[in-house]
Length: 117
Length: 112
Image (cartoon, rainbow over all chains, first blue to last red; front, top):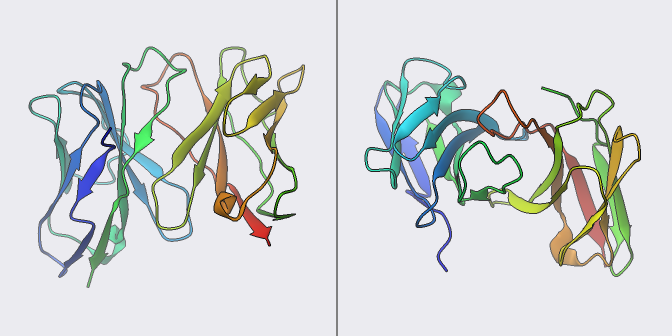
């Protein structure tokens, strides 16, 4: 079946522009995560949704970052007034179970590479 | 969150077994051990996980030390497609929302 998809795959933004990154999780998956991966580093957690509820946003680096999942399926990560340090790959992952089942695996999308010039 | 330690890089020859080590001396009794890998220009991919007993699946085997302070991911026969960064991750049973905390991982090179 279809995996996690993300769009766009590549985004170039000028400093100060707003961007919106989309994630389509696997159908029926309850949990959705966003991660940020800087060049040469491992991914870092940004935020977590269980259905439409945002249960953890402790990893969002500033109030310029905002995420939503209004109907419990598709999610959008929005970055306002982009800065050069926002340049990274943004990864989305989904999982069938809710967070109480810590044995479950996460399925990752290919990521969106954001370059801020 | 408990920390894991992995070698920065390893090399293997094609069609030979590979043993990727991970130390996690501060692991708690309810931490699951997860392994993910990330191929170039792709998102991470789940490989295997375990709690106390050794585990096998179609991709790999996971050997967990009796005291759970270390584990080893075993690729039985490396192929060129196994060249990737391998991450060993601990996931606490409670106290967080299941987020994965990635370290630097081990970059595996497979030589033909």
